[in-house]
Image 1 (cartoon, one colour):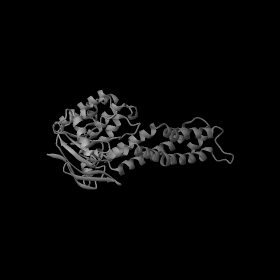
Image 2 (spheres, chains in turn red, cyan):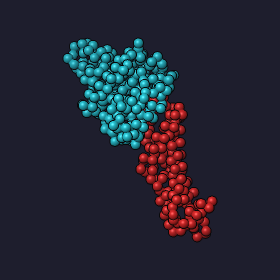
Image 3 (cartoon, each protein chain N blue to C red):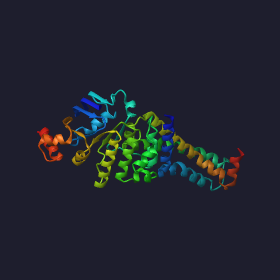
Image 4 (tube, rainbow over the protein chains, first blue to last red):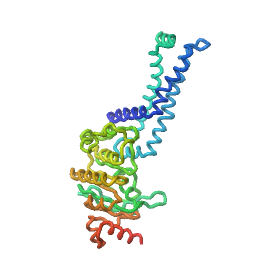
Length: 136
Length: 238
């Protein structure tokens, strides 16, 4: 049973990443927004580093997108196109299938949250932003 | 030995009576055809037998088990290709087979199955990009991936070109020759005549004939199964 679960999670995560809309908004969009926000320097007028203001916002965006948009849309499409019906004719339990769906989309959210952090810690500019990350 | 025993099966959808006492028996190792007009209840019989729907009345035994009470156990030993069923667009052929294999206690080797059914060249192809013939081939392989004793095929060849249909017939015979019992729902008389050891004709939720295609032709004094079929259906409509 666990072997089946791991399999389904891995395949569902791949499917989510292959969907151009989901992949763009979950993985690429946060990096683009972060780059746009940090173009004009690394601190806000009040002295707060831009990255401290933007990263939490983007994380909430990505988690919300994965759990409130991509996951329900995927399940609705599976039901409408009889993907779930075919699965019901196998011994796979629906709890396992939905659990795997949930886990795969949470992993998508983790990847989406990690992508802007990863890109800022590697990006050469703006210089002070990367210093702040590494100083923590 | 009977693999499927259905006795007086009843099923209604709201006010519509889909099955009105269906009785039929499928023997081990045969290709059993289910024929009948649209809306006659063919798919409902298959869906009840494969545990997808709960019948309202009558008795139903598949491999000696009642799908209502031993559904999970039964699903380990049967395979199904359903009408209108689909896979996610972006899933690849190899991924689908591996995933479905992981659902069963004693699955077939999905890589060997992929080779046998000629799907190896499409291993990395996405489901949405497959032609109708390749999709059906994948559905057959998915129906067989759990090493089933009984396979239900619901309108397997509908929408295929003539060459792909003939090819599929060969695949179904291969299945039977390996000892799998096949239940085949079809609209094509030539298909039933070429493949089926026995058939049941269902009309308005009842079995109006059960026997070999030859018996039906003899009984109606017709020249072909198609003529015999129309004689039978017309009589029951009147």
